[in-house]
Length: 406
Image (cartoon, rainbow, N blue to C red; front, side, top):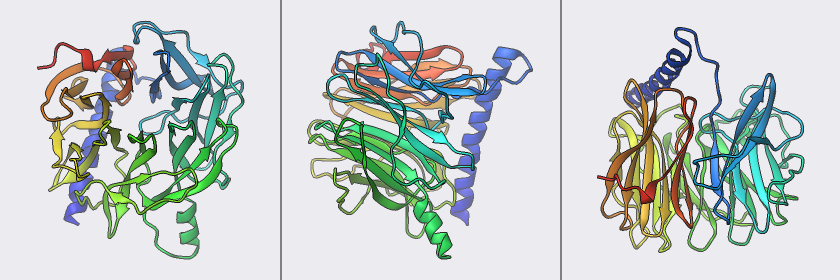
């Protein structure tokens, strides 16, 4: 009970910070009038030519679309927004649940998003793809074979070194089946599907694990062998909401999951706070996550040693730190997080140029209005922070070339 109370306090604190940010936006833009809700959930990726792409949601009255924009100068200027569907349909683009973009071989572009259905907390995972570098887009298709009107939400997207497309999502088919048998079922499950023909068709649905958290994003990253690895918030017995790790395979044959955090946070609630994941070329795993540890909530970073053992977690930021991400480029490791001080929201960052041994910290961007979570994009040119704000638009910073680290 005491652990539950501590967890509830942390969740309420995060909610208060979010509401304060919304109130600041309303006051800044419209005096005492409430601001219209804008779903700012945005993802970013860099294509093989070095062009930066973002994908998000556009609303035109009641009609909703997924849009893309591109920048050839690191985010200084952007192309006009372009819709990727010919016909509107509902799109989730808030917080942990937002459209994603990835690139395949040749001119292939993959875009996924969650399409909410009529019942609360239900959805379908949709994919739009282009085979001509974004000149045209094929009609959206549903990725998963299961068509029950249940939770298929919070998808993540990645392409492995062989060009196979992986889409993972949170799924509640097993929870509903267990409830029908009057059996207890904690949380949801994770499933994924794989395409070996450039997104034209998918095989699956393959179950990753039972008992995932219900509303935390899934982190996907390629290990040095070019294989996708998933990191997610899991519900360990008896009710510890820590994190688990699993390497995905194209045939759905998986090994036993590994535990990836050990905070033993016992709470019957989902914090809407997924992890971040990246790998160095030598196999070092870098991860960020939010949890309550020893009665205190916070954001943490840790990396593995040469044997693969996770090192001692480092608490990053203040008690208001939230939604961290991590990326690696060569020996450079960058961690960013969002932090609200009661008046403004800032993106703070830590950078190491020696693989994580020594760190410097600085403020990278800030806003007084509503904002998305920070995203780090690693490419051959370096690591770029992409952060969409309601007041300033999309802010970008090439973080591992910045001279202001202290």
